[in-house]
Length: 425
Image (cartoon, rainbow, N blue to C red; front, side, top):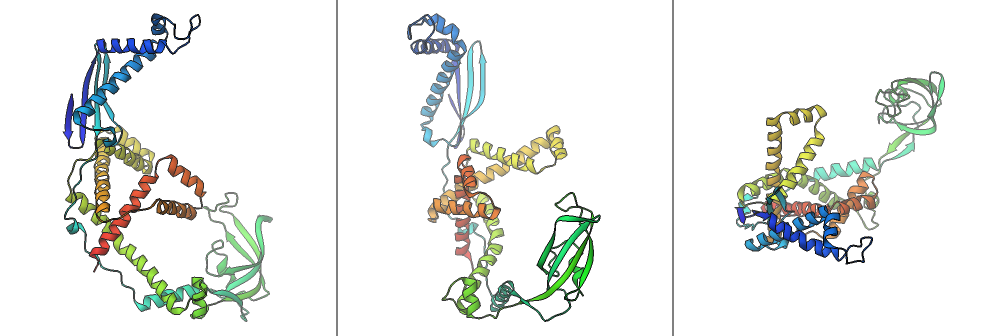
């Protein structure tokens, strides 16, 4: 017997009688008797009675499994559904074994038929990013500042912003610090790269001058053995350097673009593209969220509960991992709060699953696709940015079957960008 929940979800119901189980156990026992080797008997010649006694539990389990599989296939046949149409894994919502047999219910889901038409009105209005010549000039100046190189200065007294080239040696409680000294160390005053209070005391020092600088290491300092302690640094100012900002010319363009044929005009073009991309992301990201919400509201269809349940479980685990232990305890011990927590996760899961099917159909209509190479490139750069072993990260994604999710995420982002581009003014 099959019960239809909606167009994407069904329940296969069956009662397996004790007589059917007994008959199936007999078949399993006969098959097993031909396979097992029991001491005192030739292989395949062990009496059925002995096999039944020795392997009673295994025989019963296999017999019931085979009968359940038979009922499952019968239900699929009644629904005219093939295994390839199933979405997610079937779920046993009931399995009650008694002296009379087994009562079971198996929930199955299929991928819904999603018809996507007239979706243009779901795309929000968006403004094309505009980049002004002034913004381009400001960015070039910033890059020139970043490319500035230190040169020796004629200054005799250090000021904020100067690079003080110093020798230093640190002491705590009169004892020389381990890894607390350096020679001809270039320190930009005001960069806040040294211990708080150190750089400010360099201001006013003269070249050749020696000075004791006292500071206190922060309580949060990474080396716990000296965190919060007072230290004295014997410092000598060897020389002062200043940053020389290069001229904005073709030579700078060649250096910044790593291109011997580059000039200032090409540098401006590349900077314009860079600024447009940054502005586009800033403008488009909230619009992508709005587009997703519009699509979820606009299209209504039944979603596979087996996939929703799995997605809800992921959401619950993600949210639980962000909660404090006392918050988790409060939710788990309060039936009303726990129910609300689970319902919110399920609602979010339904929206996520709906959006996945909508995006899948829209991507086909708009001819949007992502190659396997693009997926690998994304993982490669993410691992590179995080300073992690690229092969280990890739293996993790493969072993946990995460590559399809990454690909779907890229397709969604590319599709939404494409749709917003169509509406951009």
